[in-house]
Image 1 (cartoon, helix red, strand yellow):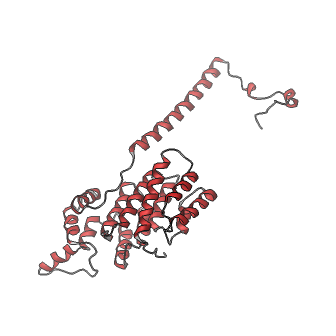
Image 2 (image 1 turned 30 degrees about the vertical axis):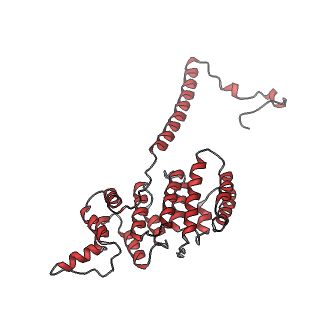
Length: 291
């Protein structure tokens, strides 16, 4: 995987504004192409984002999707950003596009911040996978290509990708923390790890306190104690609206079928009325069912 370069902070600031504007304007049910053109005029012209939007707009007109264009713009959009949009555009998934934009907006803000650490970015990105039930394999592979992470982090992400579901996440964080090294150095027969720590002392302490617990409790503790960013939660009302719409469609279908059954039982249902007579074929308004 080609390593995406780390962009200047002004690019991420404009990306955050871009994702937020998309999120807000989509609520007005405006055509997506019109939204892109409108938002493009608001973006800072000294950044590369307007050119990226032009490419997104062209790809949207051609294929009707964003993720294929973002994948081709791998020098600008991080693989994880593309992964989220692809998951939102997957018809078989349940990851809402509006939620994806909200996640990306906050993530871009986080990228623009001067004090952002790889540990905090990892927790944010991984919690998104957990909360929204996205594919861990594809998500972790995308994270490994993120410019936020150095070689030590990429080895950790690849290891986590292979062992996901086999070992507790809190254990993985604890043994790769400075706190674990401190604990081992105090023990008479303590064994030092072969790999350098990538989490700090406080992350290690919090991870140790959350062993064998729900990972969401670990994320919550890190957010409380270390001010890590919170992940947007799944929109339950969106799922409820979709469920109501689907149920209404099924009720209407059942009502139509019941009417046909009732007419058939009463002897009043005649299929012949749906067919045209041979004499009608020569008439301008004559139709046949087979047509």
